[in-house]
Image (cartoon, rainbow, N blue to C red):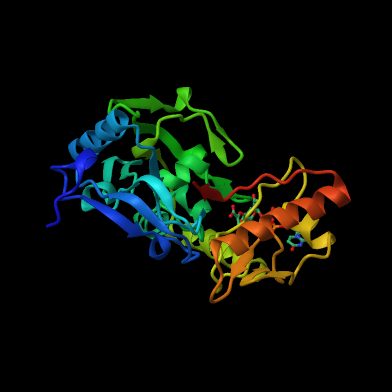
Length: 298
Ligand code: EPU
């Protein structure tokens, strides 16, 4: 095992240097992480977090990389990935309370809770991501969002301190929360008992809606922009006549204009240029500033 230079020395078991991030993103584009940290336990995470604070290294948390654009130059910081077994745990606490690790896969959880006859998670059907990423963004859509099923969250601050926030202390808004801690370690979800057949029917409806309206079999990062209040970013981009527009390997989807598809050879720069262009055109036409929903690193 390569010995690491200063900041993370002694943590070689779970910290690597200069790791390409493209393979960890749905776009399959972007440069390397200066440090790539995959803690196996809370203690590992606390230690790495303290080192970041001590050495003034910015932490980034990677989920499934589905809502993320990493720049071609990569990230000069520490990218954390909570993908060890511990972070993916799902345990029934009480009848309808589930304790879930921040690294658990939302789609696996949808399938599991259907089988268990627990309703609530199915509103996340077809949204790729981890529970931590989902909570951070208050993932959801017109069928509901994750915020409505969160009972409490376990968090870690930038100095390695653990704490919990319960439902009444949390605010979930459209694609945002009031959680400021950099790490979401896990959550307790409060679900409703229901007939698995009924949950499955609802899940299928959501899948069908997405299949009919979104370019699912392409490389994309979901919706690029947030919907401005009361409006649809997709409709605005569509009305500006931008469907099919190309910049290098990036293209505005013909199926849903709020998706930018990455074709082979597409760079993060192509996507960034496209984002800028769409913003300008929609602003010229509607005087509306589109805010990105996709996280852009750095
Ligand atoms: N529309 C157009 N042209 C387009 C796309 C949409 O005219 O190219 C129109 C549609 O006809 C519809 C309206 O715009 O009248 C809204 O479209 P849609 O039903 O597809 O919903 P959306 O607001 O664009 C939101 C979320 C999606 C989520 C869907 C379904 C945002 C930015 N998007 O899309 O979330 O999947 O609802 O729940 O909030 C994501 O967050 O990454 C994402 C894809």
